[in-house]
Length: 145
Length: 145
Length: 145
Length: 145
Image (tube, rainbow over all chains, first blue to last red; front, top):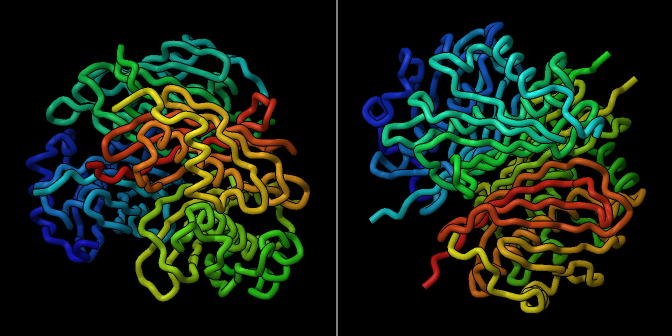
C-alpha cells in the first residue's frame, strides 16, 4: 500500500463533499463523515424519509448509495482530493432488514495500488452488532503526475 | 424454470408499482415499464436532475437503483404480485460514462427457482449500442401456499 | 443467527472432508482445517505444484477452490454434517500476487439464516499481513426436518 | 472498444495456451478453444474425472477455472499474446447442477478499455439450453509500449 495513513482529516473530507457533491445533501443533510483512521473511515447516514420504503424499511438503493460514498470517501482520505477516482465494480450482500434507525458504515481499504483500489464496507443499524449489508468495491485511479 | 412466460402485463406491473412503491415517483415520474417478454422486461429511466451529478453524469447509485427495480419488476412479471421477494445480492460492473440521456435497462432471468431467482441487467443510454452498466442479482422468494 | 458457536470440532470436520470429499486430497493432502471458533474457521492450503502456475505463482482457480472450501467448512461447522448446502454465488477480488508459500484462509459467517448463509473469506500468504484475495459467498441451505 | 474484432485465430490461441500454460493440460487435455468472433470466444471443457465430485457432478471450482480461462482467452484474442493481463475480480452465480457431460462456455467482452477489460461468461452443459453458471470478470491490462 502506498500509504496506510489518511492524509485528509474528517473536516477536510466533509468540506470536500459539501463543495464537490452538494447534491448528496439535497432534501436535507443525512450523510456524515464520523471518523478516519489507517485505511479506514466511518460514515453515518441519518434515518430520513427519502431513504425509506413504505413500512419504514431503509431501501436497498439507499444502502448501496451509502456504501459507494463510504468507499469513495475512504479512498479520498488516503490519496487526497485531487484524484478523480471512478467506481468500476461493486458487490453487495443484503443480510438483514435494517432497523428504523441511522446506518453506520465501516469501510476498510484492502488494497491501495497505483491504478486500482479495493475496499470493503460493513453497514450496521446504529447501536446494533448485526451487519445488515456487506459490500466490496473497486475503484480505478487515474494517472497522477 | 417454473414458467418462461410472464403472467403480468406491462400495465399491471405499472399499476402495481404505483400502488406499492409510490416513493419511486417522488419528485416526478421517471421509471417506466416498457416491455415484458419471456423471462425478460425492459424499463426506462428518464434523464432527470435527481439522478444526475454536477456535470450532467447519471450517478452510480441511480444506475444501481434502476437495476434493482428492473430485476424486481421482471421477477414479479413471472411470479405475480403476491410474492414478497427480497434482494439477497447484487453485483455491478460500471463500463462507461452514460450519455446525458434516458437509460434503458434490459433484464433477463437466468434462473427462476422455487426459492431463488437470478437475473442479469444490461443498461444502455437510449439510442446507443454500448452498455454502460451490467448487473447480476439474486432474489429470495418466500414460500408460497 | 441460529447459533454463534460451532457444533463440530476441527477433527470432526477433517474426518467429514476425508470421507465425503476424498478427491480434494488427490495428488497429496494439501488442505487442512486449522481452527474453528464462533462463526469462524481457519484453513491452510500447502504450497504444492498442483496449485501453481509456471513461475511459482499460486493460480487464481486454486485460491477460488480454497475460498469455496473454507466457506463450506465454516458453514458445516455451525449447522452440522447432515446438511447438503449448495453454493449459489461467489465474488472474488484478487489483491496481490501470493508468495511462494502456503495460503491461510480466514472465514467468517456474516449471516446464518434458515435458508441462506453468507460468509466472507480473507486469504493471506502464511506469515504475511497483506491480504492476497478476498471472497464473499452465499450458500443455500436445504430444508431440515 | 479499441477493436471489436479478434486479432488471434483459434489455432494461435490454442498454441499460445499449450506453450504458456501447459499445466492446464496436466492429467489429460480437457480445455479446447472452439470458436472466436467479434468480442466473443467459445470454449469447451471435456467431462473428465479430475473436474468431478463423487456422484458425477462437475465441481464449482472446475466451472470457476473454466470461466477464468474463457475470459483470459477472449481477452487475448482481442489484444494479442504479448499482454500480461491480470484478473482483478470475478463474480459467479451457480444456477443449476451441470449434466454429466462436457461444458461449453460462451464469453463476451462488455468493455475493452486501455487499462481495464470486463467480460461475461455463460456456461452450459453441452447440448442443453439451460445455463448452469454465469460469471462476470474484470482484467487489468498492463501499459503497452
